Each structure stands twice: as C-alpha cells, then as structure tokens.
Image 1 (spheres, rainbow, N blue to C red):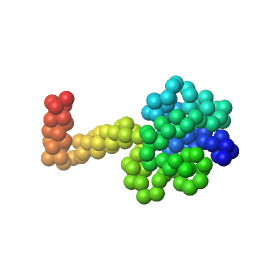
Image 2: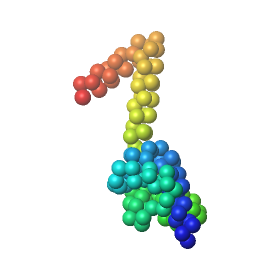
Image 3: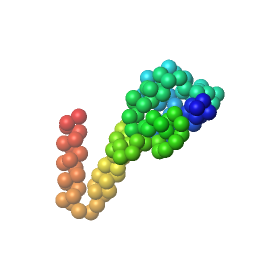
Image 4: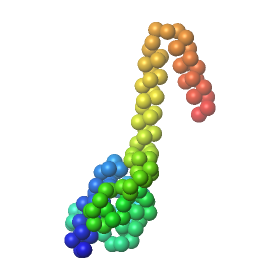
Length: 130
C-alpha cells in the first residue's frame, strides 16, 4: 500500500493543474502552511493523512480512492460538483467580464445608432450603480 501513498504527490499535482491553480493558492484553499505542498511535490514525498483530509474536504468531488491509490477516476462518479468546480470561480469571473467588455465594444462600434444608444445607456447605468 505504501507504494500508492508515496505517489499521492503526483495526484495532488494533477488536482492543482486541473483546477488551474498555483501551488500557493492551492495551499491557501486547503489551509496548510506556506510551501508545504510545493516541498512535498519537489521531494516526491507522501502527504500526511491530515493534508489528504483537507484536500478531500475542500474538493469533495475528488474520489478518495483515486487520491490514495491512483485507481479509478479523479472525480467521484455522477458527481455534478466536479463539473461546477472544474474552473476556479475567480478565473470564470475574469473571463466573463472580458467577454462582456468585448461584446459591448463590438456593439458600440456598430453603425446602428439605436444599438449605440442602448449600449451607452447600459454603460451609464452600470457606472452610476458603482
């Protein structure tokens, strides 16, 4: 069994990559000390059970069997939270804001006067609400 646990560092690294996080933000999310995850990954060492528990508590969609042994899928079967948690929320917000700005700019540059006026009004309302 120790051969599986000794490779948990690889699976933790997979989670970090899949979630599009850096090691520091992952450490903050699971509430462990600074550089503890990074050090373990660099040393290719096993994680203590409390760290694995924190990972599973923070990411309930992760299959514990996969995390410990590497067998099966990263995500629990039929777990809809895996889809929802696929991308960090902040990344999604930034991407959404950029898309909205892009669409508004395209609309504003159109020749249609009515569209321009509607976009101006929406931007004005948005700025007044801030």
